[in-house]
Length: 314
Ligand SMILES: [Zn+2]
Image 1 (cartoon, rainbow, N blue to C red):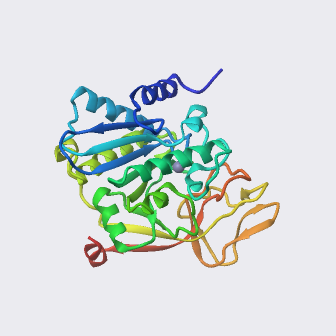
Image 2 (cartoon, rainbow, N blue to C red):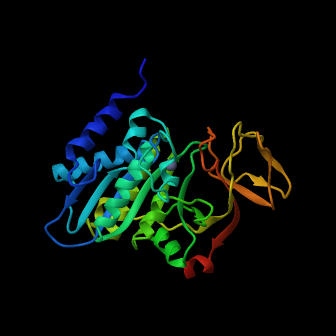
């Protein structure tokens, strides 16, 4: 039996039908009133359907007049349509680690070129939201690059998720938000929960609306106000967990937040054991790891902000 759902097929058909312009699988919506151009991306990893579902649902709501665009432009982008069609993370290479490559001989190489062309040609884009989900656990996280504190403030403005993963680009090179940042576009990744959690679609939908409200594209009454978290836990990347053939985690139930002591073995592959270089935490480990994966997750240090520290960040 073919488990690729008719829902997936109809979402792909929907994207195809409503796409216009030079970029395949990109659905633009414009208001006659000038304003910011923002990009909403789902399915950068093909096995993460929540963002794509939320995008199609919301695009329909714009079409029917249920949601009204007051100004500006939204481009809804299906990140990796080939992988989405197959319900796999990627076909040849992880698209979200491939934006620093320049090659047209792989599926993701060609898609990265198309999307980079799109970012370059649309010099009015202000911000980009990249919707993802996780393979282990049902974690919701905000993910962004460690560059300046403005990013933290931005993340806190558009989301009440109390778990942030701040990564150094050298630990996760080639991401879409990094490619966007080279064009001065403010990018944010939201991990909306588990790939298969129904709630992930709702989290994606909520964050798209918050993102659009933040940029004054739609009225602010499409979602109810929410309380800012009293405490935020930050993980900051120390290094990627770089897998080789035969990679497997050796800790049972490893997940975001699993604590490792310096020298502790946590995984192994054909090149030997993976050992924690210092006391640290595991962040977004992957359930299935292939030799072509750039990383199997990350090691990070943790800090918790509450009270005055958070007020300052706001
Ligand atoms: Zn993802």
